[in-house]
Image (tube, rainbow, N blue to C red; front, side):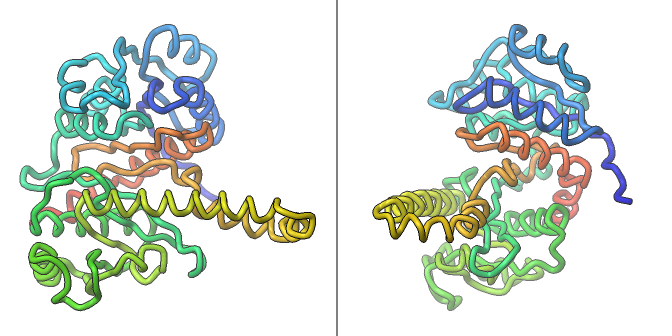
Length: 336
């Protein structure tokens, strides 16, 4: 018999996401039903969170009177709106009221609030945002890519702890043993890329166990590597390029399938297989990207998250708390 998970209390931003609070409330309800050891601190205005908390066991209202919109400047908004749902959620983690925080709100505001109110595990290590990519042609499995947006400005030495933190995430959360780590670059040879990329290669080769060399853009979905490290500017562009290409290809495929009676018949045959492929690229199975390197679990969901994706994000946040992701990352960068 599988052991039930240990208790976990997660602060959830009721106002985060394009369809908040509706999608968040439905997602919280799904998460509570799926995990009997989960407690949710639902952060938001009284008229939203209090009635919901009354109707759901293991849900408590945590009041916040302000909201940070997606188009606000993250740093200015976090400093000005001290009673926003994002800031209050991060403060709950700092105070020990919650083990982790999940929001599908402004990524920049979440990163700024977590950095300011939780603090960095190590002063000279920049927090980095990670996500996972599927292996659609290589069977089951995923690749961790970091950084995907926390650090648009960077120096080569930043990438050493990014790689160490990415490896800790792969090991503690995904069960990978001895992850293969690569640097995203424009060629496989160590002499390729900018001066900064070549210096990053040298530092990674010296200081990161498991570093195996350069990865090219074509390797992001190949399954050749377990962790791919890059700067936040490049990583964010690569991630959004993949998302855009995937959405375009699926839309084009749908048009082709519905074009004629014959292709519609073929579509019926292919539908189960295409569903599996679409699921591999869906954010609903994971639902959250960790901000690694802060003193506490902070997970950020996609702004367009559905209730199912919200529930998955909460579950991923709870798993990170139970597996002590913060401790694993702290150990990985202890000697940096």
